[in-house]
Each structure stands twice: as structure tokens, then as C-alpha cells.
Amino acid sequence: METAENQIAFKEETLKEVGRITAQFPEGMQKSALIRVLHLAQAEFGWLSVPVMDYVARLLHLNPVEVYEVATFYSMYDTKPVGKVKLEVCRTGPCMIEGAERIVKYIEDKLGIKDGETTSDGVFTLKTVECLGACGYAPMLQAGEKYHEHLTEAKIDDLIEQYRANPVANYMGM
Amino acid sequence: MARKLLLENAHIEGIHTYDVYRKNGGYRSVEKALKTMSPEDVVEEVKKSGLRGRGGAGFPTGMKWSFIAKPEGVPRHLLCNADESEPGTFKDRYLMEKIPHLLIEGMILSSFALGANQSYIYIRGEYMYVLRILEKAIAEAYANGWLGKNILGSGFDLDLSVTPGAGAYICGEETALIESLEGKRGNPRMKPPFPAVKGLWQRPTVVNNVETIAAVVPIVNEGGDAYAQIGIGRSTGTKLISASGNINKPGVYEIEMNISVEEFIYSDTYCGGIKNGKKLKACVPGGSSVPILPHYLVCKTAAGQDRLMTYESLADGGFATGSMLGSGGFIVYDEDQCIVRNTWNFTRFYHHESCGQCSPCREGTGWMEKVLHRLEYGHGKMEDIDLLWDIQRKIEGNTICPLGDAAAWPVAAAIRHFREEFEWHVKEPKACMERNYGLVAEKTFEPATA
Image (cartoon, rainbow over all chains, first blue to last red; front, side, top):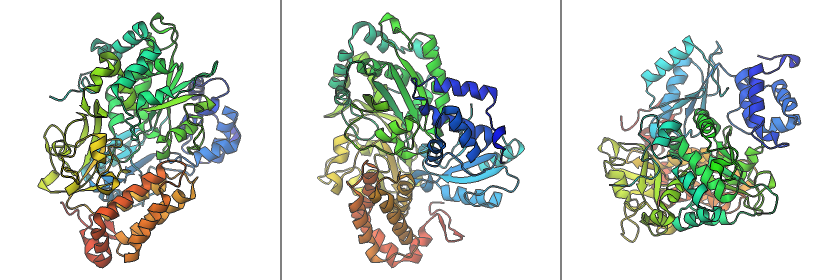
């Protein structure tokens, strides 16, 4: 959802967290907090729209372009709207040989969306991603901060049911 | 019985908490170092231990530490590389999740040795839940006087925090990691200057892998000489191996660097053999970047010696008949796996992860992905195989950072050892598509193993 520019502001507690994070770096090096603050922004506002990135730039005393170039470089940031729950299925090597492609196809069929798309109710986005460091527990997907490993069709049914009943975003926030 | 130096206590209930960790001998090494040793003594023990970087390159840690510049009045930094992203590798995640205080303990020792008073753990963004485990452990360490000002009355101050990435394999390269920690895109820097001279915020910096830093704890506790007695030759100590693929017991194993590859794959202590009674086809012993070995070069070297789980033995024969220990991401393939498909998959990964600075890598990884895709999907030509060879050769060595090499090596090795399989894809496109277990066109093929 597009939010008017003047309405964009972190909640009080998020601002406190921003203060805690920036304090981890020496005076004048606050730009180092940018990557984490963008995670916070994405968690709070759903995705990184230009007004959201501009807000982060003002907050950290950066030029907007310094925020844009970072937001577009890293694959975890969404610069377009996404669903409340992102299902990020690992597709790399070891997950592939354990059936990641089957898992993706199963989710696509079940939700009626393709890789990269969002369900019409705005709950789920399906995304294939590169190695998440769970190769021994393949196939796997990440939803918010949670790793779901040793996936089977039945497990996916359960997961989707759970998240549909309670679409907790839990995206890398606080 | 194999000795464990890092994961010995990992199974203990509650070991991720300070109290349990401390009760089991945690932070002993910090008491020893800060009360009885100088920073130079710690560096000396690490040099004696023969410890080599556990992130993949295997560079001697003590030597790396000794390169750090010490200009008067300029702060130095230690950065822990917890960006673990090499496909096949998941050992650091395991260590940090199970026994986070071990990494913190190692960070204190290593920071002391380097004279760093502000250190950071840079962790990949996807491991956010692990970051939270680490932050909790760091808070406990502060509360108990192991971090902060004047630790144990030694006059040594250390602030430690953990900071996330946001999804970029390239940030595992140390200069890209530094850029990312400065809040920028993860573009690797030209070297020199090396981070040891100009790293984070242009200050002298050392970047070490999680496992490397954790290994400093047993080295200080037991002495570098004792550590060096484990293992063979220049492969000293223990190594965490992430085992995945078609094996009975995937997972993280701590091995002494003296066991054979055969034992590692087939013994019930480790991988427990190939799943479903299948035969071994190939193995990538050190993460997706290292050359794949065909079955006849996995357990034996070309000279007929037993292949060992060491830096030297896995590299025996060079790239012609050997590979690398790398990060210890040990991926096993059974007889049903398709080498072309696997190579295409890895190449797609490198294409996705190329930062785009250097043309050979930015363009070459994409070209290789395209060529491999058409081979895999039945549209390949014989000359494509030579074309692939040509592209990878032109990437290798022609980029700022090693991602180019990492993308080139798996392709080169696959063609070197499995050329016939590539040719078969050209000659028998239909059969090879039917053999595949993935999704081809709109049709779903069942896994061959099902």
C-alpha cells in the first residue's frame, strides 16, 4: 500500500531500536546502520517504496541515492509490494537434488501463483531464492525469519493453512 | 574416538545460555589470555597451531594476523565473517545457533590478539534468527563482565556487536563484506591496499570466518602445539564439515583432519553411506565453487592413494584430478543425479550473485547459464561444450574478486570429468529430459529415485 510521504514514520519503539543500532558504530559512521534499518523499514511498512527509502535517508542523514542503491542491490529487500507472508524456497544445488523444484511446483499449483507472484488476497508471495544455508535439511523454505526444513507436501499444506489463519508477517523486524 | 574441539559441548541442554556455557568451562581461555598472556603470545600460539582459515581459502590465520598494520592512534577492527552463503555450507549457522558463546569467546581472544577494541560479527540477513541468538548471548557476556571496559581488570576494552547483511553471496568476500558493513552495495574492492592496512572505514582490519575464530578458543586453552598435533601435515586441528546430498545422514560433523573421504562418506559416525543403496556418482567436497570429483577420484587420488579429508589430499592432483577442502561444504551425488543440471543450477547461482563490477563475471556467468540451460533442456549443440569451456577460461583470473573463479571452476571440472554426459545431452535430448526429475517444459517428471 502506498503511504503518503508525510505519514511515513517509524513507531516509537522502532525509533529506539534505530538509536540502539546506530550507537553500535563510531561517530560519523552511522551509514553502517543502513542495512539493518532497511530491514526494520521493510518489516514495518511492508516493502521499500521510494517514500519509505527517502524517510530512511532523512533518518540516517544520507542522500536518497545511497539508500536506493543499497535497497536494489540486496535480494532480501522488496522494492515492489509483496504479500504478508513471503514463502522463499531455496532452489540451489543440494535443495534441488532433494526435490526443491517439486516443492515449488506444488506451492504454485496450490496457491495458483507462479514464482514471484502474490495471491489475490495479498497473503502469500512465492519466491525462489538462492542457498539459505540449510543444505543438510533440504528441501526447505524461509517464511519471515523462520526456516521450515525437510519439506513435504503435507508439511506445506499445514504451513499454508497456519499462515492463512494467522498471516503474521514477522519479516526481519525487531 | 574422534576428538571434538568446537562441538564437544554442543549437545548439552541449555549450552546457548551463559550459565550453562560457563559451568562447562566457557570463557576459561579469556581468563588465561587476559591474565597470563600478551597479545603477541596469543598470536604466537595461533601461529604454532597451524590454524588455517576455515571459510574456504585456507590461509594461515596467524600469518594473516601478523600482517595487520599498527599505525599510532588509528583504531583496528576484527570482523567475523558469518555471511555463510557458499552452497553446501551450513556449519557456521549450526555453531552460532547451538553454542553462540564459543564465537563470542573466540572474538574476545582474537580482538585482544589484534588490539581491536571494537569488533563486529557480520551475519547474512537470512540468518536473522541466529543474529537474535547472538545478540542475547552478547548481552549476557556484557552483563558478566566479558565485554565492555577493562575486561577482568586487564585494561583491555572490547565492544562487540552483530550486524546483518541482506542477501548477497558476494558479501562473504572480505572486501565486499567491509563495503556492506559500511552500509554500501557489496562490491569487492581492488587490492592492494589489503584490509590489514586499509579495511573498515580505511582502518586496519582482519576478517576471519566464524569457525576460524571459534578455533582460537581451544588453541589458547590447550596451546598451539597441542592443536597442531591433531591432523596431518599442514592440515592441523579439526574441521567442521557440512554434509548434504544423497547420503543417509546429512548434517554438520566435526572431524579430525586425518580421516579418509571413504570413512567420512560410508561410516555410520558420519554420512552413513549413499541413500537408498545407490552408488556414488560424484562429490563436491568443499562447497559449490570447488571442482566436482567423479566417483573414481573421490576416495582415491589419481595416484591410487587414499584420499583424506585434508587441505592437501583433497587438492592432490591439482584441478586435473583433485579438488579443494574449501569451506567444507560436502555435497554427495548418487548415480541418478544429472551433472549438467547441477552445473546449470550452480551457474545460475553465480549469475544471480555476481555483483556486476567486472565484465567477465557479469556477462560470462549469464552466458554460461544460458548455454547450460539449452544443453539441459535439449537444445544444445556439440560446439556449446567447447563454448562453455572457452567462457569459463576467460572468466577465471580476470576479475577483481574470486567470485569469477568460483563460477568458472565448477563448469570446468564438470566438462573435464563428465564430457560424455554433456555430449549425451546433445545426442539424446529426449532421453536426458526424461531422466531428469525436475520440471521440464510444462510437464512434471517424477524423481528417478522415487
